[in-house]
Amino acid sequence: MHPQLVLWLMAAALSVTPNRICSSSTLNTISDADKIVTLPGQPNVNFGQYAGYITVDEKQERALFFYFAEAEADPASKPLVLWLNGGPGCSSLGVGAFCEHGPFKPSGDVLLKNDYSWNKEANMLYLESPVGVGFSYSVNNTYYNSVDDEMTEYKERDLFITERATQVIMFLNLQCSSCSPSFNLKEIAIGNPLLEFNTDFNSRAEFFWSHGLISDATYESFNTICNYSQIRRQAQRGTITPVCSHVISEASREISRFIDKYDVTLDVCLSTVSSQSAVLNKLQETEKIDVCIEDETVKYLNRKEVQEALHARLVGISTWTVCSDVLRYETQNLEIPTITFLGELVKSGIHVLVYSGDQDSAIPFLGTRTLVNKLAKQLGLNTTVPYRVWFEQRQVAGWTQVYGDMLSYATVRGESHEAPFSQPERSLVLFSSFLGGRPLPEGLVRVCH
Ligand SMILES: *[C@@H]1O[C@H](CO)[C@@H](O)[C@H](O)[C@H]1NC(C)=O
Ligand SMILES: *[C@@H]1O[C@H](CO)[C@@H](O)[C@H](O)[C@H]1NC(C)=O
Ligand SMILES: *[C@@H]1O[C@H](CO)[C@@H](O)[C@H](O)[C@H]1NC(C)=O
Figure 1 (cartoon, rainbow, N blue to C red):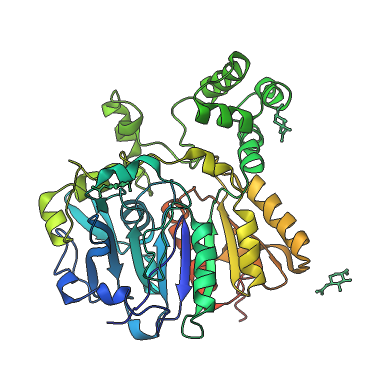
Figure 2: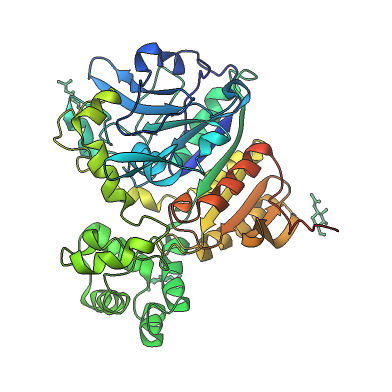
């Protein structure tokens, strides 16, 4: 057993060297009792899988659920990566492991091997956090009523789980400066993140317009009558002014329900969009990407025998859901900019990679790229790799720019909000380059005869 570490979150992958961490108490909780014999319907594999609970508060009966997949080969020499999904309140197990980059993808009654699984490169730990998400629970459920970014679940354990990544990063940083050098946080990657409320939300209108999803007139309305960040702010507070309401309903009508906002070029899972889809569904059968994977995951993780195999329990809820139905997240916390925390990380010597699936309209690359650029300027980091393409096999997989060899930005071409979902090969190249500290592949490999 290796890992004595746990930590990270929010559409973020974090890598640390597997030997010795801050607190020995944390992943030591993973024991042989957590070993998964086999998951129902899985093909034979030769890496270890573990799942179970890490108790965070015994008195209040609060526990976080984890799923741990050892690296396919030579796990002792591979880094440990903690994956934490965003949402706020969505499951790292359901989204990260089963829809994005875990070892298996559910398909009907069985699990198919994922050829681009990230445990080819690392030991992958998926943690459902905070309590109230997925199989993680608090028996005292008043706790769910006001979740915010200040929440701590690990006060005494050098591990701190909040709803959003950046607070954790900060905390860890502080904690771990007192116990280094045993803790070796190498780098953090964060995908399609909400970095700054106004810039990120306002970039949606431009993204919709430039991808042909809204008309010139509606784009004009966003720019002159009511912008997206205003709409979002009003929606969060529960009242939208008639003027803004008109703008957003025009946009919604034009975009239609049949567009996946997390990947505007991908087909939608019709069964989730509407139930009149039985006939149309046939059209999807040739798709390379299973756009209904989320439905399949929900079915799979709600099977009794699957829950038993995972050592999982439903506490205070009757079904496992992708994003928590019970947590009440303080949405105004979304207005706290997280870009500044990334800056703190860079300053403390941690390599930060921010990446964008370039087909996501929820947090479009347009805003993210601007914000990272601005951060580099603020930190006085000069461009060390000018904006250029990067390759996967023989095709352009995206664009990248590096600042001061510390802060990197990359887009992944054709990718969704949940990046590895629609471009698994490209995502795996990004992931392995990042872990290996290598620049993204710069060009075609020319074969000379
Ligand atoms: C339940 O949790 C709430 C919120 O965390 C706390 O204020 C309350 O004291 C707890 N109740 C009990 C019986 O421990
Ligand atoms: C959005 O609208 C508000 C209110 O009119 C304005 O204060 C803000 O500057 C606008 N933001 C952008 C980016 O246009
Ligand atoms: C960044 O570029 C500026 C302008 O070329 C130069 O004056 C400065 O020394 C550079 N900074 C570093 C850290 O290389």
